[in-house]
Length: 115
Length: 392
Image (cartoon, rainbow over all chains, first blue to last red):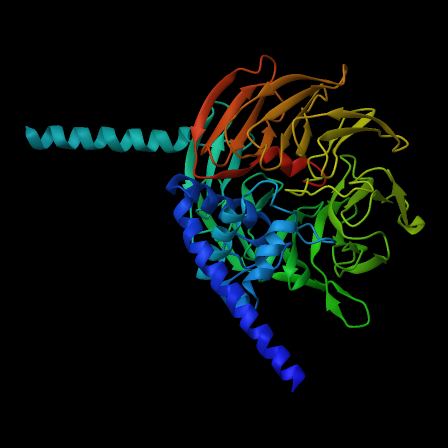
């Protein structure tokens, strides 16, 4: 019973986090200028694409297509982009991109990237 | 009268056309291919008058695409990210044949005798070897490793003298030597060479295969004159050091600059170019540069070394004088400089700037920009003289 409640709490928390993420992403996109969004799109396709493929089907880095991502929590992807993945070539981007910009990229990945 | 004039005009026109087709005979030694990575196309260029001759489209995902040439310098083999292998006739600008040979590939090589083209694949991991004439499969070498029979991503594939190919297994920490002199691949495996070999190169004389390690500091050397002696570790200070630096773009080893006495290499994740004694592989000095180096390339005469950089400092090229060991020129070819290619004897260098959408051609003596050519997201530049260089 305790564990059930615990799980419930986790689900609620996760839901809240997701809501917050979605909400802040929506406002984040609003704060990013059109020109900057175009730059981020280019960064995603071209520079992330160097390792993940321009169509996000993978390369040295894993595939990041909508199909692959639908089973992965957004927060994990956001944290990976921010902090990198130790032991792999994935670098931390939080020194280069703002939180809002990283969320914009996560949004773009989950909604599907096109050239 | 009008009819007569028409006939005369038409005859003259036909004669001119015939005349043209005979004067259009040309060699290919001054030709090259520029990858337009986002549109799945290439531009065929010539370096004598520095013009674009034509464009070939329909080549798939060309992120990280590379090219090797047939030994007659007429055909370009283009390796695409999506597993596509395309053979292009650069004289007629036509696709001769195109196959999808895997799900995800990273590069290729052509054999010493020009008869085989090898492709290194990420998915499924391994090397496939094709007849260079027909693109029919000659050999399939899955990069299977460990007790679970997993397949590793393959990187750093090069050709070596003796109808051999050498490559590294990124996930398996192995180097494999495939000897095709008997017609069938005979594989020698070097295991536990060091963690995550991420790229490899062969010295211009074809003797040493060198793999860079991402998972630890240092490089691995295989002496192809004495392959039974196994691999040797060098430059244990090469790499990111105890405090791991983030790497925003993997350096490319193929571009390693070798002069008579020195090798110039990109440090991994650090804003330096390392100078190494080519004879004993000892580190001599480090030259501070603008950003994390990606390509470090020597002008063919070895007098200069040109360097480009990783995101976000990738709008710049620096030139190092190999006698003074210092930077003598800083150039700004535009946003996202991805590649540089020297003409066969090095009087010009072509530099691609992806986000600026252009190639800039520089005079390597006075560093003046000679011309610029608009291109759609240009990346790799490959001139035909690569056909006659080991490892390219």
